[in-house]
Structure formats: C-alpha cells, structure tokens
Amino acid sequence: MNYFNYFTETEEHFQRARGTSLFLLSTLDWALLESWKNAGVPIEAVMRGIDAAFEKWRGRKVKTQMVNSLAFCAQAVLTEAKIMEGTAKPRREVAAPFSLDELREYLERNAAALPAEYGDTAASLRKLAAEVDRHYTDLEALEQRLTVLEEKMIASARTRQSEEALLAARQDLDRQLRPYRGKMTADQLTMLEKQYLDRNLLEKAGLPRLSLFYMR
Image 1 (cartoon, rainbow, N blue to C red):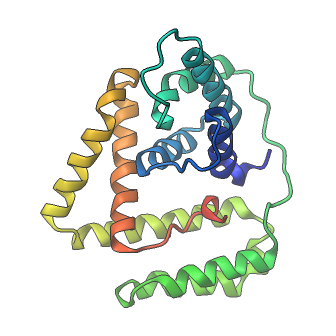
Image 2: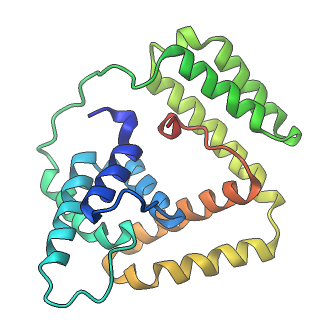
Image 3: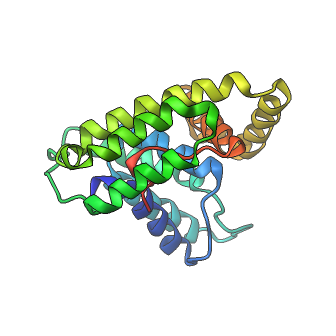
C-alpha cells in the first residue's frame, strides 16, 4: 500500500465498510484522518479499526442510525494502533503513485489557484515545479517543503479571518464532535480541533491543500 494513498485508500475502505460508494467524508472526517496521519497511525491500523467498528455496529440488535462519520471508528482505530506499536515493520520504498508530469501539473495548478496576496507561496510552488525532476527523487523532502509552505499560508489566512467566521467554525466543530467526544482523549481532541479549523479556514478562503497526500 502506497504511503501517499493514505487518504484515498482510507476513504474507499470506509465506503466499502459502510456499504455505499456514494458517501463522502465530511470536513470533520478529513480533519480526523489528517490527525491520524500526522500522529503516525499506520494505515493498516486505520483500516483494521474501521472494520472492527463496523463489525461491532452490525452486531447490535438495535441500529438506530447509519454510521455517518469516520469519528465513529476513532476508538477502534486507536486501539488497533496500540496493538501494532512495536510490531510495525519499517516502511519500504515504493514507487510514487503519480508520474513526474502529474506532480509538475499539481504544483503548477496549486500555484495558479492562489490569490495575489499569496504571491510568495505561488512563486515557491512554481520554483518547485521548475525543479520537479530533482524533487521527484526525494518525495519525502518535497512533502516537508510543502508542509512548511502550507503552514505559512494558513498563518497568513488566519490573520484575514474575521472573529465571526472563526466563531462559526468552532460552533460547527462542537456540534459535529458532540457525539464522539467521549471516544477520544484530550490530546486527540486538541489535534483534531486544530486540523478541523485549519481545513475549514482553507475551504472558506478557497485556498488549495499543498500536501502530496491531496493528489487525487
């Protein structure tokens, strides 16, 4: 399984477990998934946790509603991650799931999508695209560069966000998280809240995600 397919593989696995390919992950789901990825939760643990959560749900005598969020699986995923601690094998080098031309096009497309006030970030992306032959041989280093650029972009966008918009985002987060707070630790909730607010900010501002994990 390819390292850069973390998001797409998980989304597809959740859809299969749920029994429908039409279901799309919410902003909260994507934020949760990103928090797992950033915390180093192996994708195998995520998939096993999804399977375990759905197996438990299907074993219920009374099913009041469908599973409509990846957050339903959070506790099972973290349980599987703990089981796998110390047993995971080093990640083997695998071929990139995209071609050099696709990578160049992705960097150039993100640069073109940025508004004028993010000109420095756009210039950095175009420079990376121009040197894509070199970066294609070390995707991990490229991902680190893109992470730095995205963090700077988020910090800049945050200064432009109104108090009302931030309050609305927090209220929406609290509403979506309410059924699942008891399944997560304080540290997990803190990480998830940050990922959600960052993602919400970028979506509202119309800014692209820069990570290679978002090449779809």
